[in-house]
Amino acid sequence: MTGFVNKEIHTFNNQVREAEIRIAAFVAEHNLPYAITDHLTKLIVKTCPDSKIAESLKCSRPRVQAIVDNVIGEESFKALCEDLRNNKFSLIIDESTDRSTTKHLCLVVRYVKNYQVRDSFLGLIPLVTADAATLYNNIIDFFKVYNIPYEQNLIGFASDGANVMMGSNNSVMTLLTNELKELFVMKCICHSFHLCASYACSKIPRFVENTIRDIYNYFSSSPKRVGMYREFQIFCELKIHKILHPCQTRWLSVHAAVSRVLEQYQALKLFFIDASLNDEVLAATNILQKINDPVTLLFLQFLDFVLPIFNKLNKEMQSEHAKIHVLYDQVCTCLKTLFECFLKRDYVKNTVLEKIEYKNPHMFLNLDDMYFGANAMGTLLKDKNLTSEQTHLFKTRCLQFFIEACDQIIARFPIKNNPIQHFSAFCPENVKKGERPSIVDVVAMFPKLHDSPNYQELDTEWRLLRNTKDISKFSDNIEEFWMSVSTLKCGDNSAMFPKLSAFVFNILVLPHSSANVERVFSSINLMKTCQRNRLCTRSIIGLLHTKQYIDKNNCYNFPIGTELHLKMSQKGWYTIQTNE
Image 1 (tube, rainbow, N blue to C red):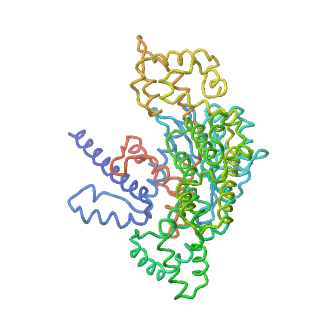
Image 2: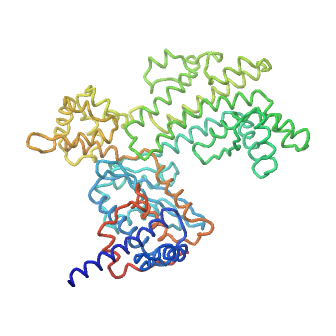
């Protein structure tokens, strides 16, 4: 009888602990202040007066903070470190300064677990200085403290293109590659393409960008003007949309701002006619002059056509899924699309991409035959008020845009002899075609992605795979396809393609951008608000690992394993750090 009672008490205690853990997870998931739990527990008791679990809850602010930091967050971190000890991984880093002027180095890792490529927040290191040696030493010390064998398991590195990160002389990249000779390095393609578009846009007359900013600034701090403008939107039967700000540090914002101005162009014109007549504000008159200038409309329509070429690739490469296998083809497609706007099509079609002389005027189309976007071409045909000088200015500046854009892309992403072009061989559709007889060249270029110096075993598996009929039924999603390949068995029930599937998953672990780190900083900004600006680094780390632990399951559904119950039953977990 005593054993039965003890079992009941143990079950009840576990139910109380689970409730406390879920409340702590709820607070972390929704970026709520810890102080709210002092009142939340009283509310739960009041609304559930008959619940013994509610009466037994202990969810004070310090206790919930300790659960987040020392129970859920710590177990999440321990599990991640264990995964990194047993799997190859890539490291993606960036540094940023938060609201309280605390500079942090953020570490994100990409690795494979259960045949899925996942990005996981690893750590946040406070910094005083952010020179290359300091960043490098902090990274190496972090791996050593937590016993992560980076010399064997670190296969890829990515960050933005800042000199301290990716400079050719003294940077984190050079220090890492000096120690890890075969490390795969990728400068974030999203940052790179943003810069390509920015440099190309410098060839467009400055007044175009100034006009967009002036329109935004005219409305940004005046509710009265916004209210008046709404009447013009209704009159023109347009959606009630705000004018957007073209922020230079945001990858996709410029095109969104251009597109919004074009959408509202007629209403804006009518509004500024009225404003210039009635308000006698010089800014309104200047904006009206620019809006009435047909060249402004032409350049906006051109940007509305050309910027999505960059943004489409940018959006795809911000994906949390593996994209390294399609990156080379996507960049080449983007480059060809730009080439065909101003170069002779036969020349582009019949010339190897890296040998195209895109600066050679002999290969240019006539100015009148170049492509500047359908809407801009329509305006050129319809608007009889355009002078030949205006038309020539528009076309020559757009040509300069194309050349500068191609220049920047090729400088930042070499087309010739780029090793990642071979990764497309592992796309499901290409594997199913069976056109590639050997992968020795790819294996030789990336020796760190496989454990054996014997290429023959890998190549034999590859040659067998291309003749296996079962793969025709597999998914075209690359992770699902290679998961199915890894489950194929021989007659003796041993794995049929163990080395090949492991090699390909290591390729998928290689990074293509640093967007995942940017997402972490965005998450931190939601936590460390103006009201919570004293939130310390330790608590931020606990919150981030807690969010990661509950992951796709919300706080109501995530599984609470025995390790969390055991952790809460141990002495010493209920400690907190200096916090808000």
